[in-house]
Length: 343
Image 1 (tube, one colour):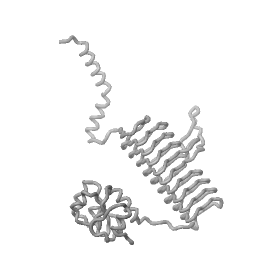
Image 2 (cartoon, rainbow, N blue to C red):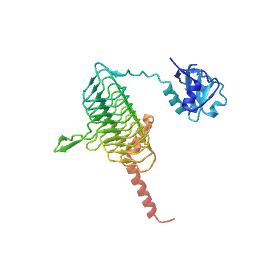
Image 3 (tube, rainbow, N blue to C red):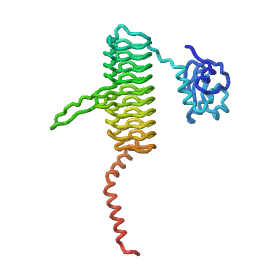
């Protein structure tokens, strides 16, 4: 495996070297288990004990952590960011071969750019536009009139419905479906009438979407995901939702129809966000929160009950059910005290 010297890595990620800058690094490694050919990092103080015994060929450190470290190091203000950039340099993820696989099906009216890869079993439908340097994994489906911007990377078994638009360098992982019908039905005397979902999904450049997600197309207008967003596995985004640039949606979260999230919003795992509400820029929502109303100001918001020993949880649940009676008792006592003659 071809590696890079510590000096080359430091220059690429914006750090300064300490020690032997000529050591060759081929992989990233965990600080406590790293080997001499691996580069590690220290960003969390609870792992500082591993610094004294690590065998890593280099460690990305803050200035104060490097003072007493005798090994090779790259010094920078944010080692975790350094780790991310170094990992990109040393990334060993297999690269799909360029070209059209014999078993791929590409409609004659589809337009393919330069240096495109379409793997085995993939389907590119009529009038789809596939721009330069796009990678379409095995068994993907690209619907009619879909637009894939330059550098889009679709892992195996991704489904892109008709007229969906993906910006440049969008990355989507296996099993995800973009542009499926929104959950739109009208009820007439107990009978459901389906509402055709005639909008689409537009995803901004640089956004990455995890595995097994579902992003519904708009009922009339579009579902819109901004640029440079990150969306974890198992996320459901309903019809006509809008998510602002640079936002983060963590796993097992569901966002109901027509909710609007601002820029730089972070939604932790297993959250439920009601439809037709607005969430301001730079809001952070902690895990398992239920958001039923609009949030108008930036900040950290929480709901739900953290885990506790079962017996304590049962006791608290019983007491919670008695809150109404307790409030009435307190009010009665306050009123009695107010009406009693002064001593």
